[in-house]
Length: 325
Ligand code: SF4
Ligand code: ZN
Figure 1 (cartoon, rainbow, N blue to C red):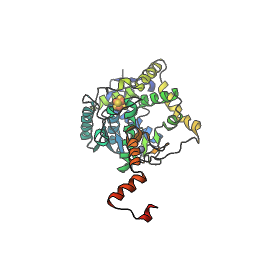
Figure 2: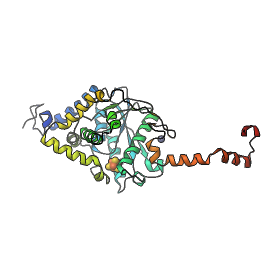
Figure 3: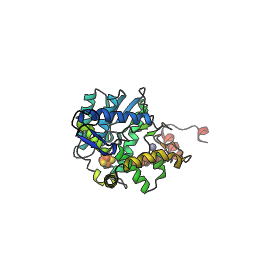
């Protein structure tokens, strides 16, 4: 079968949803054009942006970084070392280094154990390691990008990831999460702009891109991924897609098109967390609750009670009577 684009070379893939047979030479430019048109359609990025790409060492984030650089965007990487056992995090880091060298672009590392005294799996978690992991990653991605003058944070979520999230949130009618699910989250109250330029590219399309572009990435699964609900939801979605091709794309695109009608004016108000300043709907953010910062803050507040402070000061440096009143 011939490639439908160049009409010359042998096709290596049939993209059923796009009704396209395509050869290996035409594939990468075709996918890069699609990513570029997603960027334009949702007004995700401009050439003036300083982009922080969250790279995990996996195929999607490393491909995203590659595509953005090839498209002429100013994109640097951020790797969050989670401290996953069995050398998983160390190995992932090696792949990030390889891509960074290949692209000749800088990347930064945040080591969770150095920052918080514990690796991600060491945090006790009622809702599972992945939930804690996601929260910690989101926190560091946002604070790092914000504090280092990046104008935008880009993540490698693909269409399958987005559909799994959408399905999970719909099952639970998580209205707050549904409202925030979007290819573009504008900068707001201490959150940097967040974009997902791969949101219309499927998992299979990204895998083929990584293979053709010879992107080296971690192929092992994270040991915690087997318990991740998203994997189960993706299996369900794949079954539906096989039976009804195009379902995933429709599910996601129609949601994005219609969600503004559903959520008009229902936006939750955010205020800075009293400890770390991260925007939150509560007094303290989820990151501070999970990492023990809130516990420490409360303990310190007790220690700093006015009675104790006055008596402590009184031992070494008597407070003038006037000030005690
Ligand atoms: Fe983190 Fe879970 Fe992903 Fe592993 S599978 S990196 S624990 S979110
Ligand atoms: Zn906080």
